[in-house]
Image (cartoon, rainbow, N blue to C red; front, side):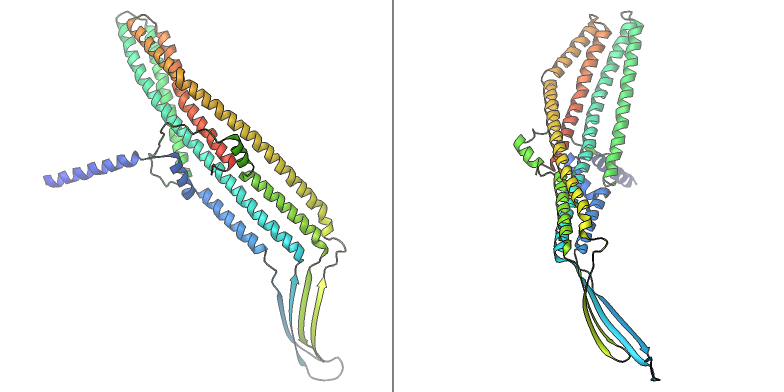
Length: 409
């Protein structure tokens, strides 16, 4: 019985250890992004939609099917009293499209497929950027919660010191109330950060379709993203980013449609062959028919097609201007955030930490008031909380730049 109990305890301990390992499993941002492509329902639906559109465009490029007709019956001559005779007919009818218009239409459909692929790539990068942004926010909040927890522990120690000094008559009760209220606010702030972490964690699990166990953590090695490539390389990538490629493909579609409209002077041909037996004869029929553009024709669509092409040209130009402005804004944002982080790491954090140490020493010795310590502690806390925020914003700006260019590779 004792051995069996010992075995149960060992199994329970092993299960607890495995559960702790599962809860402590961490992922990098790129590992979660790779999982996003495999698990996210919206991205999988987008892939299927693109495949459906490509298959539909290929079906539209096929020639029309011929029409086969057959008929049987009976008939009697108008004159005479002859008996009824068996009648039958067999015919085939096929429309041969205008070869020039069809060639331009097929070219337009190929460009339309390219436009759909480029737009799909743009949407995928945008979704990846949004997902990364939430992960960066999660990393920032986890770091801030840790800093806030350290502040709570320190304020608890300071509150105990103030209470002891109040009891000894060396400090005012107002100082004790102020320290306790500041401690309460810090604890509430830590709870708020925990609630925001839980909300973002739920969003991440929903984006991954519940493919990860609860209690995951996003690993943050503290390394900041490297500087972006040179401006010349960025401009080269910008000229072929997915959004611009989509607009250019749509312009090519409009040009193909206009060319197809101009080649409408060559009509579609309708070919027909018929073999039939009538009451008094057995006949063969063959013929060609064309549509007469009496009321409307391809020429009536040319103004509309020209307007569509002009609009497509303007949309390409507008997209180029938007991309250039976005590139300049992102580069300026990255430069400003990098400079702010460098200044914060080099001097501000060290100076703030030293000010807190001196203020605490003066507070314990009675040389400084609680006001001096709280002001120094508040300044250092704001700088400490600002570093993960600046890091998250810098990573987000890099991700936005990568999404704009359609990836670094």
